[in-house]
Each structure stands twice: as C-alpha cells, then as structure tokens.
Image (cartoon, rainbow over all chains, first blue to last red; front, side, top):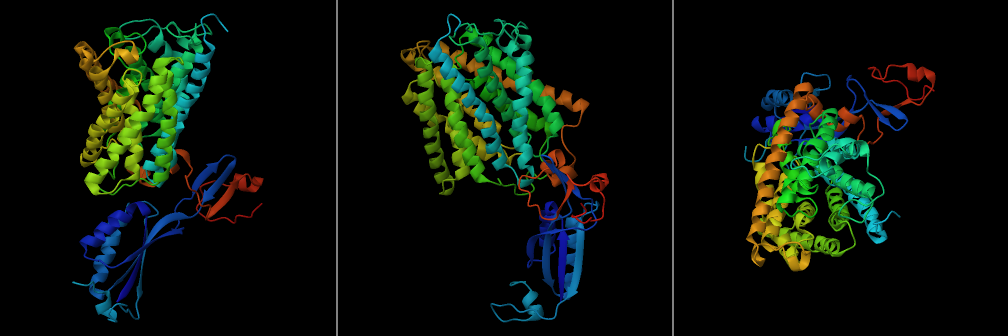
Length: 117
Length: 435
C-alpha cells in the first residue's frame, strides 16, 4: 500500500480527475494548496504598490492505493497534469503503515479497494 | 436658457443620462458574476473599456454619423468633434443639443459593452479596445442612424422607442458574429464552467433595471406622455417576464433559479425597450410574458451547441429585442402613443415596417461585426494563447486578481533602492524585510 500525493495546476485538475476515473482510481481526496516550486513569480500591481506573489495556487490530490494500482495512478496524474511548462507540479509516493475503513472496520488492502470493485 | 429649451425636460434628461451611464458598470457587475474567478476583472474591465473608447469615438465621429442630417444609410460629418453641438435645442426636442448628444452617448457605451459578453474569458484586451472603438462607430453608429437619426428605417415608418434596432438586436446579433470569429473557449463543452458569484449577477440585474428607467423613460426626451408611458412600462414588463421565468423554471426543474431571475429582468427590460412609449400598459405586461418565451428557449438550447456565445447576449438582447420590435407591429395604439396603430388596431402596414427592421438590423449587425473582427484578426491576434487562457485573463491582461489573499506576497515597490533595483521576476525567494 502506498499514499500517492500529487500536486498539480488548478486548471489541470479536471483533466487529472478524468484520467483517474479512466484508470478506475475511485478513492481520493483533493484540496487547494499554495506552494512554490521554482517557477517564476507573478508580479501584481495595485495602485502604487507592486508585489511579487511567490506562492502559486495548486491542487493537491491524496490517493491511497494498493500496490497494483500504484503505477496506473502515477500515470494518470502525469497524463492529466502535464503541460510541459515549469510549474506542472510533483508526485510524492510514501509507504502506508495501516488503513482502516471506518464504516466496516476493514483494514489495509480491503480498505483501499473501492466498494463493488 | 436658450429659446426653445424647456427646464423640466432638461432636468429630467440630465438625470436620465446619469441613470443610463450607471447601466454600464451594472452590466460589468452582471457579467463579472457570470464568469470564473480568474476572469472576473477582465470581464468587468471590458465594460469599463467601453466607457473610455466608445465615449471618445462617439464624440469624435460616431455622433455625427448617427445624428447629422437625414441621409438614408448614414449621417454626415457636420458634427465631427462635436462641432455645431451647442446649447440650442436639438431639432424635435426641447433640450440642449449637447445634452441630447450625451444621452445618446450613454446608449452607445452600454451597447458596446454588451457585445463583450460574447468574447469574455479569451479575447485579448488590446484587440477588444480596437474592436470596441471601431464597432461603436461602424455598427452602433450606423444602426442608430437608421432607427433614431432619420435613416431609412425611421423614415419608412419603423417604430423603435429606445433602441430595439441599434441597442438590442445590434448587440445581440453582433455578439453571435463575435463568438463565431473569436471562437469558443478551450474549456467550452469540456468542463463545467459555473458562474462564480450569483450575488453580483443579481445586484447587476437590479442596477440595470434601475438604469433602464432612464434609458426608456428618457427616450421621449421630455417629461411628456411618451416618456411617462415608457417609464411605467419599464416597471410592468420586466415584472411579468420575471414571473414567467419563474413558471418556466418550475416546469423545467421544479426550482426557481436566482440567475434565471436576473436574466429574466434583463429580458423583460430588453423586450419593452423598443415598445416602451408605443403600447398600452396592459400590452406591456403581455409583452413581458411573450418576450420571456423565445429567450428562455434560446438560453436552454445555446449551451448544447458548439457556439460559445458565452454570456447569451443573443438570447437576452438579440432575441428579446426582435420580439419587442415585432410586438409593436401588432399592438401599437395611437390612443396611447399619438403616432400609429398596429395590426390589432387596424393598421397592418405597421407590422410590415416592424418586420423590415427585424430583418435588416440583425443582418447588418451580424455581417458588419463578422467582417470587422476578421479584419482586426488580420492585424493582430484576437485571443490569448491556451496557456494564458488557463492562467486566467486577470493575471495575463491586468496583473491583478479580483480576490487577492496577500498570502505569500513580497513587497517590491515602494521600498528602498536596493529592492527596486532587483529584477522583478527572479527565481529565488527574497526576504521581505530588506528595507
């Protein structure tokens, strides 16, 4: 079992969702985050004040998967999220010690497998 | 006061001009609520741009082409740079000529802003400025001459009280052409694109209705009966359009929608615009109901097509204006307007005059706008790149956000010399407190 954390552009989030759906990855969370990953800063001006915005808006996917779903998930994040420009985001894969489905008490692989799969 | 100028008329027209001017920022609010967060400012700024370029184009040449002389297709150049536009009363009115010019200018501004609704979220701001300046003269100015300035439609007997021809059909069918030339947004039909702030849409619609009392009520250029009738009809027709929209929404989805209500207010105001001073209050209420039906149908149908006429200017303005212009031909009443009867009151010829306008205005608006944008497109790109479109027009065109959080921002200016000498787009994060 792995936890896949994918950070992508907000305007690519829809394509990532589509790619995950096609890869039959059904269980995930997403949230809005701000981060800085080496892309150029935006410059904004409000009346006499000019600011550099170091943080870029991103969308963070968290996906807990069984081992056979790891590669399809990574592929879906890459396919959906890639533009080729700096700022496309990153994918972090970390090991998972334990997963529990609250409703049934199922653990580990049974808990990360969607109902009906 | 110069001889022939009436104090009451002038006082009302000064107020009416200000009321109509308010409609342009109101439209900006209405439009801004309907787009995504990242395009809020750009959408509003297109309306603000019309305040600048359409006003200037109007004073320089547009007013003259619309209102100088009674040429059949276009006016003269006698009032270029407002020459000869002074305090003496404008022919046919008892208000100063210069005030008449300003009142008509506010119509040109809001109509130019209306067309922006077709191209929001992807058109380059610079290209839009050029388009707006040329459109306000070549399309609005010409149609205003036909309907208001003694051109062939007005001379032929077409009744258009406050702008069914130049304003509503002019903007609506131009919007269709603009959407076709500029092309759909890259996300159109591929992603769910939702209005980002429904409250803006409702407030904008409310302010538009408020301003519309000046738009229609002022189009009699006096405090006399046509203006009063138009003013009252501007209350009655949108109320009926609103109630009709409620019923249509209930039939379709069992729920009355807020954005539908805002749209209905606009549709009702548009429908009554050409007819305001020509039909009885009861027929104005009927027009509110009748105008809602085709516009509702087009609003339901258009998003299912590939045509990304983004904010439905065609449905709300073109179609409702068309309905209003034709409706006059049926129910105009000389007993109310002192000018002409319609078909139901024994004058079938009036319907012919109205039908002619309902065909000519859309044809000219569509063809002229299509050609104009194609020509501008030869000189400069009309739209931003797909990457910029994804980033959002606010950042790309204006370097601002509608709702900046300030999180993660670093002050560049005003600050000490050291900081202002730094290149603004360097990669490394610099400490914010270097001053």
